[in-house]
Image (cartoon, rainbow, N blue to C red; front, side):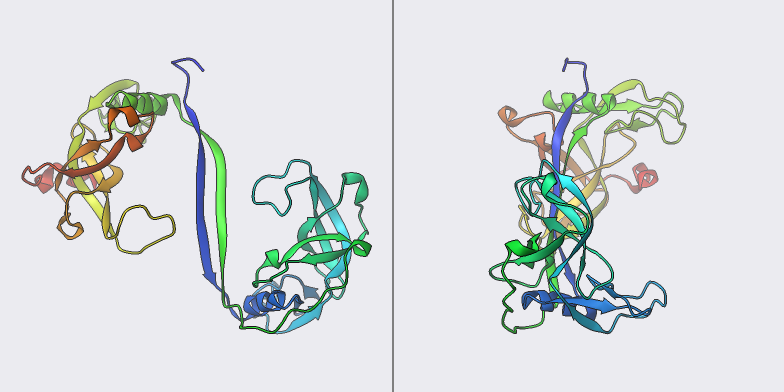
Length: 318
């Protein structure tokens, strides 16, 4: 990549999704905790695994759960030659639609076989269960050919599963636009670079490449100050997994001097209850040896000590 090329970097978005379960899914997950598969009886008498919460035809809640086997037949499958982190197996395997005995709708799950030559439509498979089921679909680790797994030993009765925590992770390579790349390279030099619309003359930081008002390229580069005004803000009071800053703290939109659009950053160095619209703030940069081509070069913003900005100076940016 040349100096004038666009920047790109890996980006990971991950969090734990926590949800409560209604009676239908609670029953299904509680069954898995006992190494038992329960299907939902639909209005036409067919059985679906996993059970939907509502019938797709009548829209009525699914209230009847019926035990089905953990043995079934493969209806269709797809080979996974290069597993990615978080998948059921770290060696090549198949994802398959499996119709369990006693069910009518297929369950999507992993099948562990040595190669794609060892799996076929119509093949009989059996579930391999976790040693200590917790009440999650991953209690079924994967399926194997029916003769390669022993019969299932039921687990003990336990408390009903009323909620689940499902980790969500998305990893991809983010490619910045040429305009964004200039912005990020500016940050590596301690500068905040925006672009001006040649028609309305609004300055966008970070740059957008085109003015959303006039629809023309924003080709004129403008360096703006690292001081600005808080336009709107949010006080964060709820703890969450991976939190790095003690609560309460403030996330705010800061309108930099010379810019016409605010951007989101942290406000520290002041009690959360004292943050307000119009507060004048300045960027607090990390030590230069920690700088990269990232907005994280700015640790946070803190008050400048100046009088609050007049509302008329920033109201159009709210």
